[in-house]
Amino acid sequence: MLTARSLKKATVPSTLIEHPSPANLHSNRLSLHVSEDGTSCWVYVASGCNVYRILVSLKDSLVNEGKDSLLIPEQTQVVESAIVNRCPHRSEIQTILLNETESNDCLILGSVDSYGHLIVSKMDSDGTDVERLTFSVSPRDFGVGEAGWAGLCFSPSHWSTTAVAHSFGKSIDVYDQDLHLRTFRTLWYPTAVSFLQHLDSGNESSILAVTEGCQLSIWDLRVKEKGGCVHRICGSVGDILYAVCNSSTGNIAVGGADRTLTVYDPRRWAAVARWVNCSKYEITGLSFSSVDPDYAYIQGVDYEVFCGQWKENIKTFSFRGDSNWLGFSKCQKRDVLGGWCDSGSVFIADVV
Image 1 (cartoon, rainbow, N blue to C red):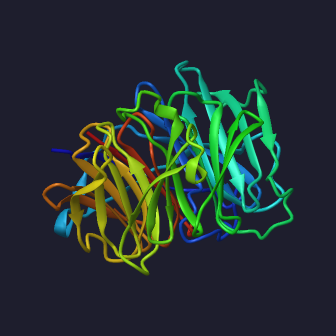
Image 2 (spheres, rainbow, N blue to C red):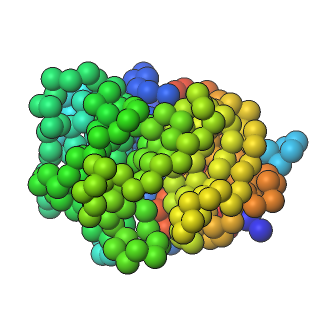
């Protein structure tokens, strides 16, 4: 059973970010990297056209629980904060993502703005800026289209392979560094994109899961028929899906306006579990646990984030922000969760 080891609350200095930009309902503008000893965490957040980094201490502390297993955060100080030294975007950033490479001393930071402009750069894992490699890719329509939500994901097997989703463009563009590989055209406005891994297909990095409208669509880079779409699953008609994630066992989970977590088995594309009305409001963030894939972390459009066992529909614990979420993320290889509120507060939960 998963339990929270600590829940920290820190405040982003107003001298760094005075008023965060609003972005979209399901924009993800926070990403985490935890030190090897687990005593500190770098939090990367995006506001406007820039990316900022904040160092927060994660030293163990007593966890206080309130009613219904609600965790009470412990106030902590921001050890260090600064703007990330990289080329700024020309419009508001919609998504940032950290990708940990096989080399422990290197991180890949990717960001995409409201027109689909992608910037990817390498940096040291200790948070220092190193101009090792930076490349940027302009949108396929040269930025003359409509601005809106844009998403980003990295291939699990090749850090240089990225997929960029643009809502109003109804497109998914796949790149190898700055080389364009493929464009997928969705039927509806895409809201989330993720590379799938741990499938039986052998080539893990060739398949994408995309939420568009009330549908989950699966796309394969190797397939030309039907524009590359190999499967579609329709959810509750009229209820937009906002989040998709993939577990270490291969299961795919989606959630959205219907407030329901649905888990699919990709071997037969059938729902293996459905947690109805698990969230009070729309689900805008999802992630499977790295410790136990039978657990999932769910973020609602309100202030709450909770952990639950999706097979048994049982909530384990939860915590709440002090205002609307601007970003929610889980560390790539560890169960460390982070959330950023529009009040400037950052919440970090360490789960074991």
